[in-house]
Length: 196
Image (cartoon, rainbow, N blue to C red; front, side):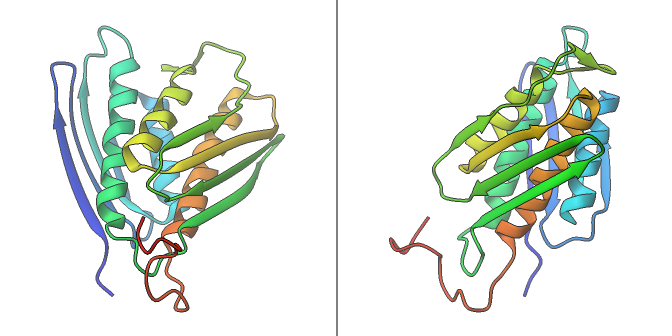
């Protein structure tokens, strides 16, 4: 089968973003958002989902990190939706329970075409590095709505904010990799409606 690759460019008065995603990659990443911890998270997403991912972001970081992180989430969601395309033959659902030291994270998602986010990450500090922790919710909200996926992130255990956030990104990657993978028994779209 052909590799599923998509690219999206989004330019606004606040950000200039280019993302290319290969769902059938090997985990290669080239990430530059201007926010070190966010780069680390997106690298982890690519590596653990085995996605090839290129992200270039110019954002108004002189204001704060909000626009850069949220808009990157929007574009990542768009590129996931475009790369998945018609969803023929894919598992559609994905899940992962991921341990990271003291943290245990659950992610479950459905590429249903109906956007929704439910998350309960208990973050106790305002920043990790130069990353505003309140932006974790905004990022995943933006991804879920732009990709039109139902996304649940549940912290089952955890204390260290770095570990909690990183476990969320890794669990999301593993769940998405499962959802976009092919199953030879699925010959069309996995829906009683016939489309997603």
